[in-house]
Image (cartoon, rainbow, N blue to C red):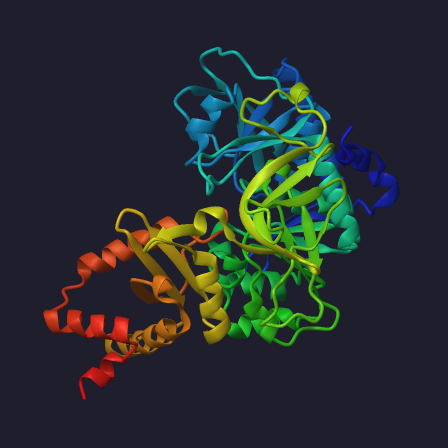
Length: 520
């Protein structure tokens, strides 16, 4: 039995039932809240309705919804009746429902979702909410999800996206380990902001629920607005725990980041899903704030290692840290030199099932490749780049992650390197806040280009440099490299450059001379 049910049984004894389990806020006020007492009532209603309508055992239901104040009750109810769930979006619903052969879907909206599903029940949870049950019109062979907490889908950044069935034991051990590492108490205010299709959202939910703490959510329009999100989290609600993908955190401007890091209410700040944002280490921070670098993959849901920041600086390499409970990490050395290779994450108890894998055949310690390259020394393991960020250019292997690191370390500029296979071009996008006149932007690019040429070996010099206000993000909050490549194509189409500018650019690129100097 998942500890979530044990926690549910112990709530009346261990928790003030009038404490909020979840709060919805915007940048002006608290919009809605639900207490643990109300949650218990909702769980009773929903679990009874689920038993009445769904006679199959250990099936998987699609949840077609965003973060909302009723979601904790829905998730817990599914655990009570021993069903698993998968989060659906308008983008993935069709494909996932077919691949998982979903017979049932729950939503909060009675608008038709998918053609092959019909509305069969409306359950009134309270005066403001009805949970809608949808059923697949055509019968199909249903898959077995016995022992599975939920189903996730990998982002596909290392190739074809995979379906990941996450067993109770796998995610439970992880949540308990992190709850202990972060010292989560019942008075915590935890931002539940990670997209629901990205498995760190499960950790946010579980560590809050297992501790009797409070989840804080915001409407989607607030989440997408950095200024409004800052106000909602740190002025209206004053969260104590924040887990975020670095690219999402860095949407905040320097002043907002400074205020966050010196906020005396924020106790824990966790960065995962991307390279640790070393730029934040140049800011002052409250003495009681603990900052962590966390690392893992969906295939061993959710996190594998954790490192607490102590005296590291912007110039420091940030280690992946020590392994969490029942988790192992090793670096598979391709060259047998023992210094670098691909990271593998393994466990004998925290084993997820990928695509059509049969659980009974997964015995012993199962290692999953991460697609990440790391270096190893006496002090630990250090992430270098994605495996698919190593390309061959001018007959030599180059690492796009190293290019990004060199530019950041020497200039302090956040940047993203993208290899366009279609155009055979190395692209680099520099993040600088603000809108600039074309001539001023051109002069800035000119100076940056000269610096980059002097910093990098010839085979690593980008073919294209561009200044952007912010990096585009995927639905999981990671940098969207495909969007950057499209941006490059748009700029190339829009530019109508004359021959003088072309030759000026070539001289600047290969001789390291500022274009402005060529005019003298």
